[in-house]
Length: 444
Ligand code: FES
Ligand SMILES: [Fe+2]
Image (cartoon, rainbow, N blue to C red; front, top):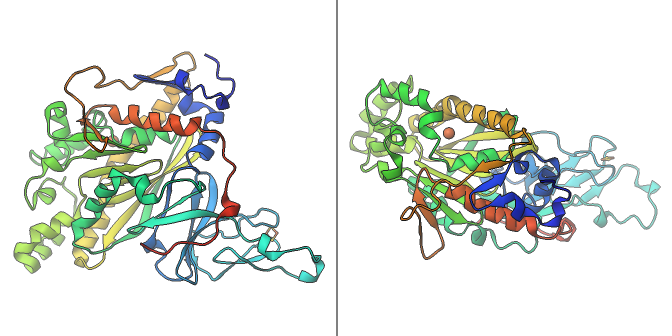
């Protein structure tokens, strides 16, 4: 098959009910189209409010492949500004995070307020009467925030963020409500880059099929410490176990491991051994007595894998961001989280979970992503099979909200999110709308 023009809406030839084409992972034109039709037209996760806690704080990042600055302006409103000087194009902010009322472009000194307005240019008398500073502010995206999570889009017609989240909102609430109203605080991150397409991560994010094979060494480590350790249930006939994979609509997917945890204290008891944690446990048990089991459960992940299309994955107690850089280059950013008001020892343990799956498990996955990419570069072998669970009666259910559920090893998440991908990619190219966006948004 020859793909001549990705704008010809021939996606039906590349996405079939039980397979997708390798070009979706390797074709440069398709990647460029995704950066507009997916990573500009949907709500894309950009930052957490706790990363810009005070007025005038900022954080830089990307909206798709566009460099941006997320600011909390002097009116305490969030802004998503293109990090692109309106003079000759240089980035105006070159730090990861900080505090600034004004961004001064290092190239020729144009300076911009943190709400995007052009504040001034050096030696302004050289500009004629028709130079209108209000025309030359930093362009900005539409921004909304839900319970601390800041998203941006270039689509003025996109639904509200809450509507976009749909049934994923309730699960996000559950992820946050484990802490009795206490707020999470996002900390520093593990950053990893692999040579492969960003969708390899999204495919994997709700993949309960690979776990007992890809992460065998983790099971073997845990197995030496006794049975019922974290994730060992993936190796015990997961097709017939209580875990489910779900498709939530709008591309969002979910794996629920919580049915494996029945009692307070189970989350903690079923963790893999982590050197050094015994000291913290001793202190917590001595100090908090009967409340210790509940607190220790809050040290570790929610056993929920919630994936908000296209780039946000809540995994355990971490926030993972999928950052595409090229068709064959993706960065994964695993942010640690602490919780305001929890004992310091519990937050220390939360930080140390960064040493667990991100350090010991994710390399297994990233190796597979790179090896998939290598295999997918063979043009003569066209198809990726996504049909597990198809045509087998009694495996899938659909509830009144349209949420599709099945055994955790099903590939229903891939089949369904690709339908949304196809819908988005089939839309006519929309002119970017940033010039029409005025005003930021306050915290919800
Ligand atoms: S490019 Fe920014 S001032 Fe010239
Ligand atoms: Fe994995």
